[in-house]
Amino acid sequence: MSDSREKEVVGAVHPQLFIGGQWRDAEGGRTFAVEDPSNGATLVEVADASVADGKAALDAAVAAQTDWAATPPRDRGEILRKAFEIITERADELALLMTLEMGKPIKEAKAEIAYGSEFFRWFSEEAVRISGRYSVAPNGATRLLTLKQPVGPCLMITPWNFPLAMGTRKIGPAIAAGCTMVVKPAALTPLSMLRLADILTEAGLPDGVLNIVTTTSTGKVMEPLIRDPRLRKLTFTGSTEVGRTLVEQSAEGLLRVSMELGGNAPFLVFDDADIDRAVEGAMLAKMRNIGEACTAANRFIVHEAVAEEFGTKLTEKMQALSVGRGTEDDIDVGPLVEAKQRDKVAELVDDAVGKGATVLTGGSAPEGEGYYYSPTVLSDVPLEARLAKEEIFGPVAPIFTFTEEADALRMANDTEFGLVAYAFTSDLSRAVRIYEGLETGMVGLNQGIVSNPAAPFGGVKASGFGREGGAEGIEEYLETKYVGIAL
Ligand code: NAP
Image (tube, rainbow, N blue to C red; front, side):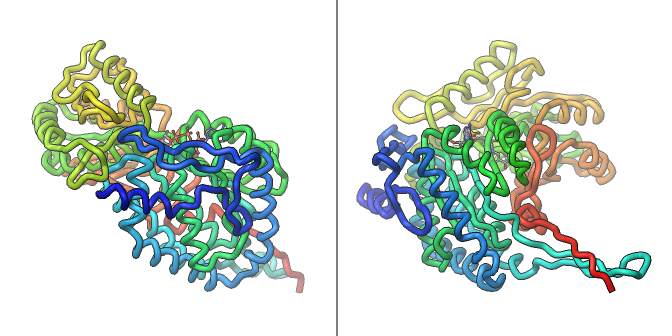
């Protein structure tokens, strides 16, 4: 990819705050640097919002709410549909921008553009299907009318690992439902979201419906918004630790809250599984997004009779991956997002090895610039290793073994998290026992990927609550009102 093309793509972004349909500088002209994780170079300086800027964004969302809620559903849906089409046309440009700010290989970025834009297509269709109910009260004396109305102004806080899709799966249903919003993308990767604001404007989104605030004073700028009585909903995707704080803050205003938090996905392989298929699934579940996904398989729990075969085949696949700057052709594994993330992955691997795990491949960070970590497979990992409990968020596959089905299920559920689990088996009865017994919001049965705009994405336990996508996704942005009608 040429340097001039990269400059052109970054240069197309407005590195400012987007408030009430206007691009503007942060108070005092403050900015912060967004860097390319493949070499640490600054891509662009972006507006660094103050508390007053954050409040201005909420003011704009509140001012636009009434008119937006009254906009015909078909019009709201058409805006989403148009935005979906523009994103699709500009997929190459948007993918390059995403790779530059986040590091993921260009093919992964394209996959995210396709996945993220699908939420706009899906919710463009849902916008015109919001309906209620009419019934006769049991005593026949009154009529019961149930209707759905937009929740009202929303605050959306998103993480760096999917810079576009984590936004579109909130923005899509909010637009469809008739809610206005303030979006706060991650400081590490705000560029995709800023570019999306231009696309939605081009698609006809009225001023004030979408407002974007970028900041490094995150807690200070967000807390007053969460405590502002005009805000009606908080939706957050990020770590469990931050999610807990935000739930506490949202208690004051008794906000509607959705929390998409961390994961620690178990990946179960039974001795009756098709091992080649399980390995294919493992590569997807582990290596999508360089392992920096909440859905990433964190613990491979493999029957002892097939553990060696599974480990050998997985190692071969991991060794075949090419590591390098995501913009280069045919790269499978880009850099991790920042030095801190790479160091955490290294620490978890060192801890596991120190406690007795065997390195089948990888196990270290390559020399040179950029925050790379080599694709790694560990076998014989003891349950005391930190990575049995903590989210790895990197290209590391630890293999644990089991003998009895009941032990596999117990090990899978032995975590505070409950986002997703994967299970590979060819025994139907076992499959039913396993997916019913797993304490997670989602299960991938004989498949290594679950994300789908037409399905309800979300977790249980410390992975949060609320669902994004599917028929459930729009409900998060709707209130139910009941009218009792006297005869
Ligand atoms: P994070 O540190 O929790 O940050 C997520 C977002 O919250 C960022 O925009 C961050 O802003 C903001 N934030 C941080 N502290 C805040 C505060 N005190 N008040 C308000 N906002 C605050 O998480 P991350 O490292 O970006 O993302 C990785 C985590 O997200 C992983 O745990 C992963 O599992 C989870 N995740 C979950 C899902 C899901 O759907 N369940 C999907 C993707 C990722 P700054 O950028 O300024 O810090």
